[in-house]
Image (cartoon, rainbow, N blue to C red):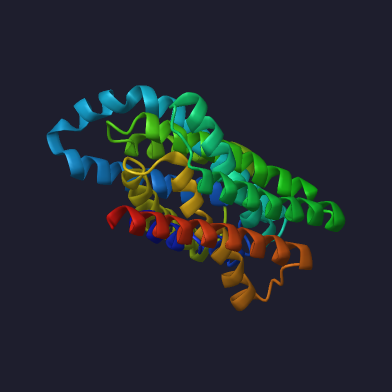
Length: 282
């Protein structure tokens, strides 16, 4: 759980980094960032398994072929959403991930979801409803829709990670990044951007995203899908405030209200879980 929280905090800088790129389009960012992510994750996979990497790759192949496209398309939709709406709208709409993850994990894996977790998920969905209402009001509905698609795809990716938890799922991350890179390269219409922005994208993909996704993939072996994605809401809550502080991209009233509801949901869930564990230890 701690590793997932650390990963979420690291990924919360995604929106701020994207806003630093004034020249590159979302398609170009997908190409460079995803290429660096794929290279970094695959190098880590090689370092972890050494001469056995081919054996481990074959073991994870079936799950990776399912999870990879889910993550790859989700990454593309995420960056397109950031280009069409505010970071706050994108990230808070992504707070719907736990709902979809819980439902899919129950159907596919038979993972039961605790009552407190369901309450937190439903409460978070109420906050997302406020965000979607804000999208109708401010004309950024397409950005919100793409964020919602990202949430569904990422939830399915997490469930697939849980399904393949008996093997190393890093190849799924690398495969997904290659798909995102390919889509970005085809749609970009040209990859000529400044050296500074290329370096930012490469560092973003190889260092920040590479480390965070590797930690997330490892931690997913030990935590149920619904709880993984609920803990990941930390990223959705914190990310808009980095942009607010640094870039002065002020969230709207409905966005702040929705974010507050999501924060209350995850805070209440954490407190409830802590109390339950304390009672069990007595």
